[in-house]
Length: 403
Image 1 (cartoon, rainbow, N blue to C red):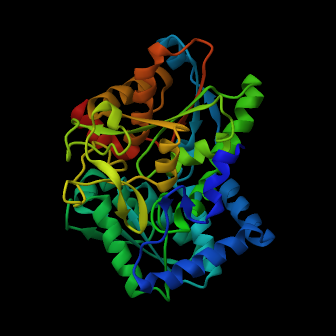
Image 2 (tube, rainbow, N blue to C red):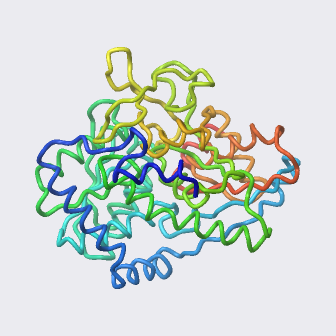
Image 3 (cartoon, helix red, strand yellow):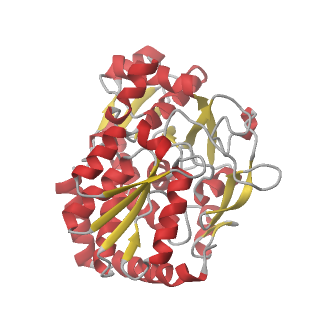
């Protein structure tokens, strides 16, 4: 890996200028405690054995890397492989991180976990792991997202989690995080905040990335076995950014591998109509560096610095900030970020369903749409890995209504 790409590790918790810990004094102690516990867990054979066992025998890893032959033929090349995170227990990549943090909660003697959720998949994963490990679980979700993700709300309750509806602000993911952080401040001694993406104060962006890096480790080994060469392109949707960084991280040192993150272009480029933080080149306005939920990164905000409302057809992509490592990768031009519209994501979901027999989550459909838009400029011998981060069961109400 080049020295340029090693530079963020020089200061723990920083990715270039991004990252850090911008939280109330009350939360510094649990953050230091979590950092210590995680650093010890990385070299603890017992913790690692337990983590790997649950990934294999509970979550269902490794996930397949499937050659999408009919989608490849339909688009006329490049050769497309799908990393099938949708086949994991609970239906998305979120279970990888939930297992890791659940084990850390046990290790720290915290009997209660709290989580935020937008698309519901992290809430379901947190409730699932809490049930498996005997932990109390409370999940915060905006009322707007509750309506969109009724199936996942029912699943969380079936698993024994308390689901708390958040009716403030835009009633989406940002507001669910606000409430979860208020809970954490009040209950730090007994509670671990099981944050679902590469967001928040250090050590969360690094720790969640490390738990999700299994995606890229497997994909790298699988593509070398199948094609005897590295991919030319990686595609993944980007909300907070955990599924994408999980795929990208193992390829950062490979200059020939292009990394493309696809954001939510929503209904248009004006502030409030989208959730595209890094796609300014396409005319999406409103993102500049700032602090949100404990980390310094690109944030959608108005001229007065107020956090902007966002829109996406996908409940998991409508967050106004992006993980700090993605902000740094964008600045370094090591990864490329663009956005696709709600309509393009719907069309992509239908195409994948009818060519490959896979109904994707709306979040993953954005990555497919990004690939479809770029495919005419790609060569037939290009080799793509697309992270199919989740399955579409949770979005069937939306699909049936709009398609």
